[in-house]
Image (cartoon, rainbow, N blue to C red; front, side, top):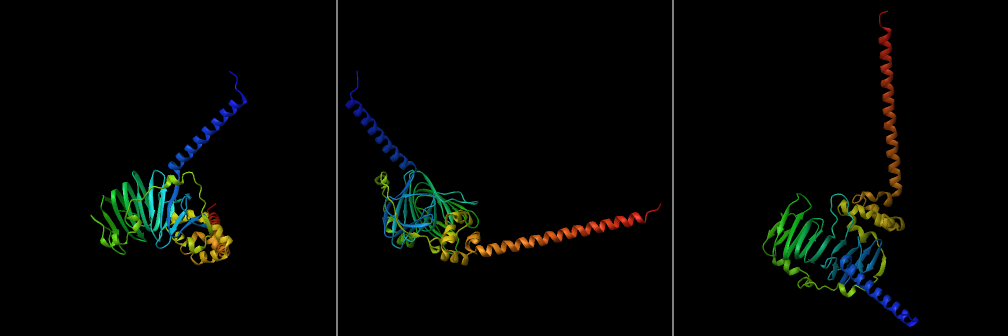
Length: 326
């Protein structure tokens, strides 16, 4: 049987259509398995990606070391691989998949401050300056600022491990409420405190809705606000070394390009001394030169001492030889 030009063309079109469908399915599956996406944005929310600030929008894909910050009254929901739903309340600072140094295991999220609700059917966990939490098939609501925290397990179970001070672990069941107030000892109760329930963001009171599949085939680009200023990233540069040291390569170019950024970073060097070569290059070069001069002086003193000791030993040996009997 001979194929006509029309039948060949039809065959090729069918193949192309099949490949396109397969690719679309593969992209959708890849999104479901490995991507993080913004599902809901209510109110003002900012995305900090590398050295740029963006207005966060629904459908934006999220990358490693992305930072989300919410304004007072705002709410954001993001969806992570494995069907993990994360609600972000007002006045919150959160980093996705931070790169970390010694002393901290890389978590999928790092909550610097604010409100977070997580919902997952499997295992999940994240970190904050005060604690690490590992949940299992749980809905949890957390509020934290500095050393203070409040953790409520709506359902499922969680393991709460304190990171500052003596490392202690609490096993939390459904309904348990753990908290630590400023200067107080951590406590665990069988029900949430009324004052905590009164201030829980209203969006946290209902189940978080999954919306990620609506954005699986969309490529939403966030609107650029501008380059980051020092004030935008200062809270992250004042965190623990394991988190802030890997941020230096991300933002050091701003100290070179923006004199205002450099001056602000220089004024805060006591909080992040690793920034000295970029925030105060002249002072850094001068300090290195002074340290090199001191090392040379110490080495010269050691050499002089060794020479003096050798001369004294030689003189003593000569005196001993000269006083010997024939």
